[in-house]
Image (cartoon, rainbow, N blue to C red):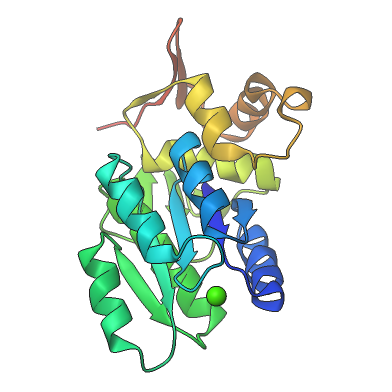
Length: 220
Ligand code: CA
């Protein structure tokens, strides 16, 4: 899962970047509205954390322009304390959720997980595919109740496929959603991670759909 983090306050931005990375997300950051607008238009994010008070272009304008341009990714806005009108304006502008500063990092992570799940049509915090279960709260995958040991890249890839189980996911889509912008994408091809995951998972779980990509096949 790939997140766009838009926050101009350096200390909070650093804390958020570290927490999101530790939670297993690929993170792109912007510290002003103009860059945020561009990145949100050009890249495909699984969710956006958007501060409203930003230099160059305010967060509400950024959000309105994304929505009017047809960008539908989940957006969690960060609003100033006691500014209830910001929440109303933000939701009217197309925000999916909000948090009031200061907030607890755990709450932000929980709300993000819920937004990403709902966007993928998953209501529950646990996503199952046969014997394989992804616990989105703990960031853990089990097979028949046994925890899998996965690298962060393997986890990100499997979590993405689990959110879209049964659907064909192209390599391009995987690259877009697994790596941050500044990451050297060539050095770690998707095929390598798929091969590693297959060794750790039940056979036949990850199907290669020739010319199209991959599909997680869940037994009925
Ligand atoms: Ca700000």
